Image (tube, rainbow, N blue to C red; front, side, top):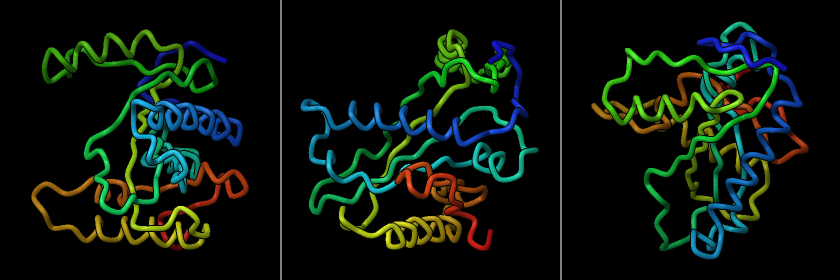
Length: 193
């Protein structure tokens, strides 16, 4: 465990870290699907993944971890829209990954500076929790879920929009499966690894 602040941690990202991220994602799922939240998605969670630089660091060990991007995917509810922009930021807690150092001079506006001050109170790295739905049944097999995830990423990767979707940016790095647990640590993206 370390409380040292750094822009990036180069400590190995381990299976135990994925286990902790799974628990964090489960708590977020429970918050999201509470009675006064989006209970219609309670039984529709199909996958949780580690994405972006954290996933690359898990694979190669030399990228470094600034924060941890965790995405939860749900089976779409026919006729029900999914929250377009839903994300939360929580504390990973004490670990060998240390704490993130924020550059206050780089803040683009007062709101971002306020977020930096709030996140500096975290005991560990910041975990960004994001969600999307996929056009899949909640009982879909894991191979079908992986196919749906890859299709979503491939569509994003092919985007030529001036404002690309989040899947465009996610397709630039990697994705590691956190849940279902039996396949934890499996590479979902990039294809071929």
